[in-house]
Length: 226
Image 1 (cartoon, helix red, strand yellow):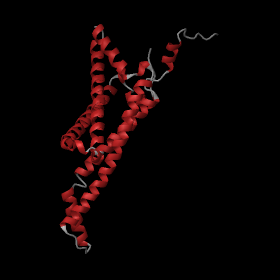
Image 2 (cartoon, rainbow, N blue to C red):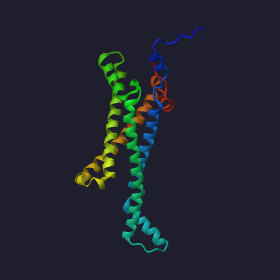
Image 3 (cartoon, rainbow, N blue to C red):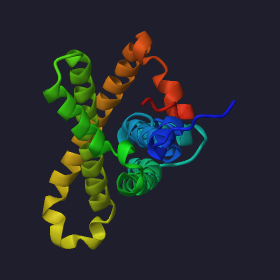
Image 4 (cartoon, rainbow, N blue to C red):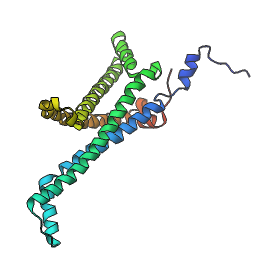
């Protein structure tokens, strides 16, 4: 029996293409690892290597071992330990900046139907044009809006983080350092909020038959629907 092929090549291409291309999946999981690592370094420096209790611990343990340590020396050691953790945090920041550039380039070079901006426009047009399944489309629009805010948040995090990393070369802007640091720190809490919302949203969506398999699709790519 002869095989009937679609007349339009783009239809065949779309049917055989992945819902999530490999490049986007790489960015998603690499971004998750980098952000998690960055947040862990903040957590460590806020708890385990916090200057005052760490200095006290260092002094007590060295004195038990018979060493003579002053309070200033203990604080210097604790501060140095915290600086090492912050160095790792900076490296994660560089990786996050590289991934952000990768994602922006990806938006320009990936297939048209896979572009994030186009998906937002399409979803918004569907929401305005149709009354059928309006709630489902509205939910999709809300999800994409949250992702848009997340991308904006990433840009702010990267820009402020790079400013703090290269503050010695930006002496002319030293007066705004404190404000930049405050913005960077506040964005961290917003990222945590996004992670919680993201995980909760996936958990709820996986319980629905029509949207199950979100996690596996982000691992194996999933299949495009026409």
